[in-house]
Amino acid sequence: MMDDLWAVSSPGAGLDHMNVLAIDQGTSATKAIVVDERGTVLGRSSVRVHPRAGAAGEVLQDAQELLESVLSAGRAALRDAGVRVDAVGLGNQGETVVAWDRADGRPLAPALSWQDRQSAGLVARLRDHAPRLREISGLPLDPYFAAPKMALLAQRHPAAAVTTVDSWLLARLTGRLATDAATASRTMLLDLGSCAWSAEACEVFGIDVGGLPEIVDCAQPVGRTRAFGQPLEICALCVDQQAALFAQGCLKRGEAKCTYGTGAFLLVNAGGDPPRAHAAADAPGLSASVAWRLGGEPSYCLDGQVYTAGAAVSWLEGLGLISGPGDLDRCWDGGGGVTFVPALAGLGAPFWAPDARAGWLDLSLQSGREALVSAVVEGVAAQVAWLARAAADAIGGALGTLRVDGGLTASRALMQAQADLLQAPVAVHSGADATALGLAALARLGAGDAPDPGRAVGQPRPSAVYEPRMPGDEAERRLLRWREAAGMLARRAR
Image (cartoon, rainbow, N blue to C red; front, top):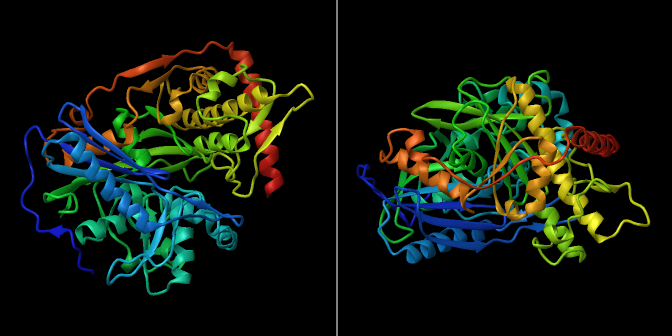
């Protein structure tokens, strides 16, 4: 294993009333906050990163830029807070992968983002293995997940370590090669029931199971680093969406959240037994993952994705239809006239059509800028509503209030459209840092500063609650029209 400039020996953990540095390494930015034991944010920083999209389905990220953003954001948040910090929580993008030199940690190529579709050909060749892989991992065979991208990079760099980005970051910070159970469950290589690497799945993808990282809990000490000045214990690792589920207090079966960032990600707590999401009758179109593993005991979740939410808003801005996200509310015409399917990077759940492309339908000579922008807003909300419906069917009951977070929750138009199409309340998280707050809570658990998950998270209070205003029959009519349009685009892509 490589030597690391920042790794230090690890003394015992466990401090009262600790402050935590939580770092959320995301798709377009790395955010860092310093949080006290009451969940008060004492300091924060955000550093942009720059994914690059190509014409052949590439979405690439500079791995060294990701590391530098973690260091810069973490150090800036500490300066902003001006207090001593006792532990670190580190979050990651989940399905983004990198090939790196085992001797010195140097990245050997750009990281492949979770949005990258270059492995579509490999996925097509493995199609006969899809049912068995889903039975093992809970995930449908799709380029979105890490294993196809890992296989592609392993073919290009046969002597390299190929891992999800979190393992590389941890190795650079502490010298330890590990990943948490939740992130591991996003690869397609984890046996969902045992929470161990599956030799059978690894063989399908041509990946050496012996070279994969150690799987650890989401809340436990995993190594010490001096990268942020004073020696600090990293006490939490978690994939971003599961960390947000934790922060939202979705600790019981059936509780759900949706994060609206670059994409929109719906997660529903599925309890302590592995959901049989590989069976279409149980959760058609959804995937099943580890929500978190604490004290060796996993909790599970069902999830679905809209690949382009914030990315669709940026696309509208690039087209000149809006000048920024604030225009979503100014352009909102109530929706219902023009239909939009947000498949700008393919369709994820419940369709799994990676080659599908977006489309406006029901256009007329009267369709202007407001109608186009409103259709994009309603299109994102409609796909989330379909995901919520599938999740409710899977757990055998209504989800109730949907807890939401992410930058796009600032759009009143989107949140009202979501409540209307769900026909359920939508509660907006009170801060912009839900993922990082979840990491901080997990770090407190991992350091022994909180006795249980409920005490670690506290009681999140929403900043706003949107109630449905649209009649149920009108919401159903719009959803069925959107579902018909999305199904048509998915069929055309196959």
